[in-house]
Amino acid sequence: MIRIFCMVKIKLGISSCLLGEKVRYDGGHKLDHFLTDTLGKYVTWVSVCPEMGSGLPVPREAMRLVGDPEKPHLISVRTGVDHTGRMMSWAKKKVAELERDELCGFVFKSRSPSSGMRGIKIYSETGMPHATGSGIFARAFMETFPLLPVEDEGRLHDPALRENFIERIFAFKRWQEFTDGGGSTGELVSFHTNHKLLIMSHSQKHYRILGKIVAGAKKVKRAELHQQYFTTLMDGLRLLATVKKNTNVLQHMAGYFRELLSKDENQELQEVNEHYHRELVPLIVPVTLIKHYVRKYDVKYLKWQYYLNPHPLELMLRNHV
Ligand code: SF4
Image (cartoon, rainbow, N blue to C red; front, side, top):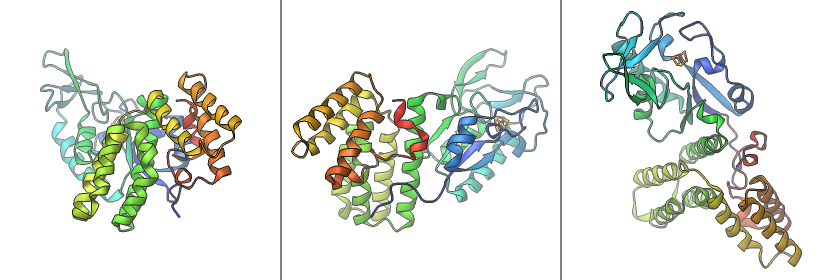
């Protein structure tokens, strides 16, 4: 029997100031209550402050990125001191250390020249912003762990991006457990089977490619097979599940019940799916009805779909999309 939820807490990296640690240049913090109080129940945080970690004091001068957008420097705004070398050598050691932590994702502080993952202003030598990029540590981290789910706290306020990130970290954790358990071809078939509808809700294209990878599993060495499968899976899950894609999955699931449900039940299911399609109700409404029929009629294939049980109920994620 598969486990619907991961039994061990998920480990996520996080920019320290989001946990309320007073490590910012001005001695303050940026506590994010969703992260600490809600998501925090299901994860173990690994706190990382690159500026403190690389030896800078609190308080300190504010910094910004300056120069070539491909290789910007980290420069203090008032005195113009270049901290790039110190930050780069610390980041190199830190990512090696984090590799041993087996993280399932990272939540970065937005708008930071050290920790920001995207859209950070890069200034020209004359002091004008002329490009955007990633903070120095965030960039080193993402280059080392290209498949790891990453987001910043600003983007996580968007319900669709939040749902997507949380689905990915839970999928990442399940993959870790799958590979820790040996990751045989038979287990890969089960892993894939239980993720089918979840994948379909993100990308039909990736669903088809993953199906082919699994069908040809016996012809490929295990390490290569895992690499192909997991890279494709994470690429696919990164794409947002839209109302249209979710409606397709709901209709697909309805097909499993057509012969089982009474006329009234079939009609009710079609109505609820249609209401979701017209965005009159959130996804949790058809999902709850389908889960009820899955239990009532013991539909085995659907019973183990992570799409119907993607993460703990308390995160309320199917409520907002
Ligand atoms: S944004 Fe990053 S470097 Fe700045 S205080 Fe927060 S954790 Fe430290």
